Length: 502
Image (cartoon, rainbow, N blue to C red):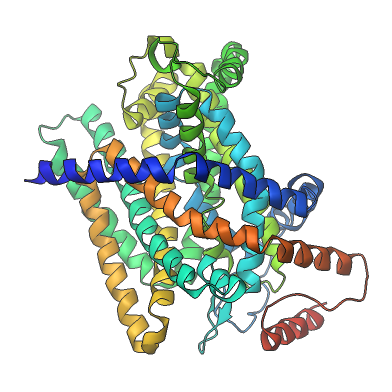
């Protein structure tokens, strides 16, 4: 019975996935990024130094200093908003997802990840700008924003906003499933290597229950608790992974030139050439690269902006610049390190094409560092995945609030509780689903979530350009009215806050 249900789900998902990740959506993703790049004068290049100078650099310098007084809203700091957002993006997609892309689309898929990330930097920037500009403030002072808000109040297509919110709910479930599936697979695999088990399925289920309990405790605390946990875990897990990856690449430094050669030479393969994972058509290479790229950095989905919208900053552009760094860090640093580590560790011509991504990720660390590598990876991957589970629970919660926003405060509260309950159940259930299927399902949900968001970004690209120009004109000393919010009352409140803090 269970097998027949899984088979039916697989067939339906394969059909929808073929449509969602067909050429129209791929072209939409790239063309949206290109349009936004042109309208912001390639901000991801021209303002990249500004992005570093106003985001991560002052944050690092300010570590250990006394925190500023509360802004009055139930918001989080810029870094906590960024940490929550980056915890949603830096997950299994950066390790297992990259390996999966190489196994299923060849090394050329990495180049398409880079291409999607280059345009994704300004796409994510634009999402953040619109998210903060159209965010709403409720009676309790909570700031809420996201694609459904700028679709509803910017594009004024309420029906599409509801569609986007529903797709976000589905994507949050799918993302949670992928992360838990990878945690249970990694930890159970490591334990099996150490002590051996007769029934790995039961072990995975127990791991899923443990994850669900810990996640539930944190999720109940809302964005403030999620932000605090993310801001503590993200720097630690990122630096640990970067150190291990650089060490592995250093051990195989002579193979780095060949790795880059494979990435570029296999990115435009128009005919299947045979020979393990090197034989993929151009369509497969670009689809896998783009899908995994979007899965990893989430640019175009409109997901991370939900966390950014809870930031205490009043300047949409300032938080938008965090989005530029976010995609750069996620793809050009973390994903690139994973790609180079994998390609310098293994000879791809010896692979059969039947290898499982999670198992290959463990093998990669084991080949380079032995049992120590397995132990460290068994810490890194679960941390990456767990923080993603936390972030996406918040995204789904905000989507549920939007869908039921007209049901009153009590109705919204009930909807959020129901969502959280289902979310926890999905965490446990996903340990029973095969790896390939869980990836495929979430790829489909991500693609569905991206479409309404990308349509809106294209339609509001002129507004993004105006808000951007307004910010940098003011920085140059020009006397222009600040564009901080789409709503006159909030714009005045935020403007007054800026004047008080100058």
